[in-house]
Length: 187
Image 1 (spheres, rainbow, N blue to C red):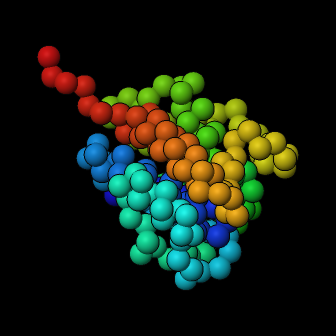
Image 2 (image 1 turned 180 degrees about the vertical axis):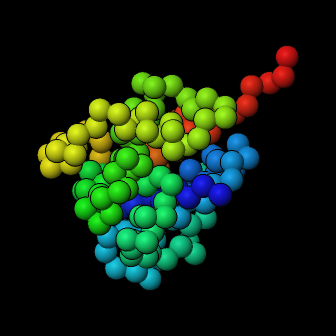
């Protein structure tokens, strides 16, 4: 089974939302993928109520989720780490430097994946990720551009959570189509 770890700050909003949306996309494709989430702060906290509400609008129940602190073991074991923002990606790569070739922000991987095209049938995920990784420079982790960040709606109105859910839903669908494309129909 493939393990896709979704990472954010407190693991009470963006990462559980993204994990639920991506897990649904992958399940619909019949992909054998585990999609846990974790954060850089604390553990045992329930998801933000507005995140639960936003996911309910998508037909998903994340109310039983409890936050958990990401560990070096989590990062080392993940086949792919998807960070919600560059700060989370930086944390993953500093914690486990070997994770760099298989750790991306969600937006970055969707953008790079669109450039290289969907993973061809029979191609290992690691090989496709290596293509997506080509040309990346670790110094980009030092910048403060938010181009690849998904804004944290915590503290915002319900509309901010709905907008985050819509963005995550779009990105999850696009990533699923790139990494786990549906098989071509027989002709």
